[in-house]
Length: 267
Image (cartoon, rainbow, N blue to C red):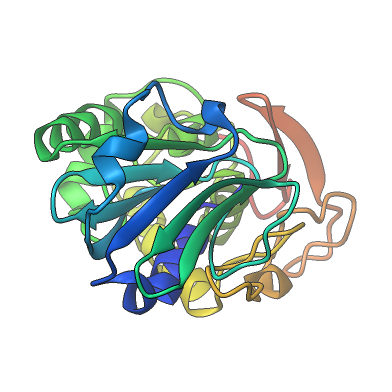
């Protein structure tokens, strides 16, 4: 599932290609992809794309009137002049002959049209702190107000936006914190280490193009490279790169979680 680094790379690969383009037509191939809008085509046609932005795992296409809010979910892809096939569910044609398509094997992704006010309300109520912009004290307060295993909290998009299963495992390993640790067990230095690793690992992943585990590609169709730097994610049963201990797998918040029982001792 595309997380913050992957979504950021989709946007970076597309923003210069689509900004300023006028939408000539919209073809909805799979209606369920467009979230509860029967007037979607009328609202989007003839609009001009101003820019692309990211908020957590969301892609925001700013139009000269209104916005498209896109969540890729598990297997969604937003491709510029991409190959159209059986997994193409929406196509946006531009007046210059270029086009943008939404492909999704599992069809879990969603595209919505929102006014500026609707978008602001949605983001304010549904999306948490932005990792690259958040302050340490705000981050600490958010975590301290939550109960449950730390990994579950990191996955909560209303707390911190953009972290999914891949980067939660990597962040916790780099911080030396067991995924089942409660926030009440964290010391001040733990919050600082965790804060720094959230920002640091996500930035490294962005620079590496994100992680391609199965079929993620950016808007150009280019795969990521950060999967080669994973320390624990997807490595259950293999040796820890730090201590040589066998990495263990458990379920946290319904998600497969890999950790080192030596480097990340339970508290």
